Length: 158
Image (cartoon, rainbow, N blue to C red; front, top):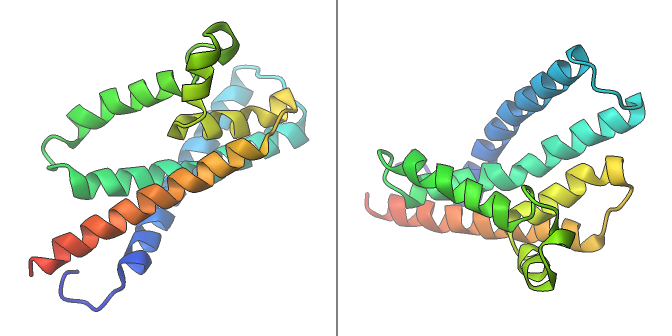
């Protein structure tokens, strides 16, 4: 890979597409399990929720690529597990933001998990703000740019 003239954004995009395919499998399995165990949701909302979950997984595909270039491979999962749990907590996925106070809710809006949580819950809550969409797009750009930067730096060693 280092000897090819492949542009970093092209490489990152191809890796993200592969990660999105894996993400689609996860979303499908989750929805099948939900159906088997009696989850009740109108079909249209169910399909919309599944599609939004899958689309939002691009943030974590880009995050994984960035961290894959940033961290040593032998330590990646030891760092990523707690980091994702912390991001989920700060993004308001474990506790409703309304119950945590204004300061915590303000901080949450600037974390990668916040936008994903709001967007994926939108078919259930009916509440989709522009801020959540901007959040997902901004974090995706940050992580893609970070991955491209690390890819360039990694290939510069050759």
